[in-house]
Length: 122
Image 1 (cartoon, helix red, strand yellow):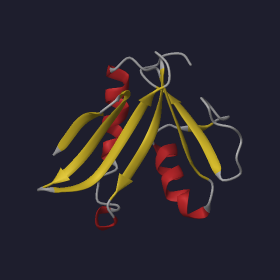
Image 2 (cartoon, helix red, strand yellow):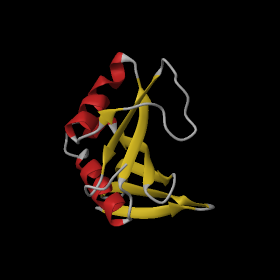
Image 3 (tube, rainbow, N blue to C red):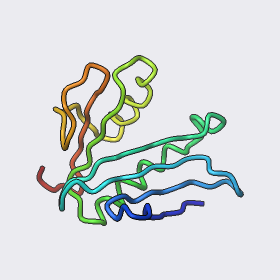
């Protein structure tokens, strides 16, 4: 079951959770940066559900971000080896590497990625 909510006091953030019975097994969030650009703030899956299809939440978030009117979705993730599976997942979903965006600055521990939504311009 997939649920959607907004963080209290943070209307620019939309949060989704994936439930299995009464347990949260995955979650993700986006934050509006401007009218056309949002940031994928968080993608998490419980350790017990890794590689069990919960990553399809990303497909849902991409579709919802497009329906919300965004034409670009960007993210920051780690550059260390243990983040490689996440980076590969984002690449599989069409994200490409980019320069820092928003309030980010170059950081050797960070990698920045972005992708176009709904065929819109950056």
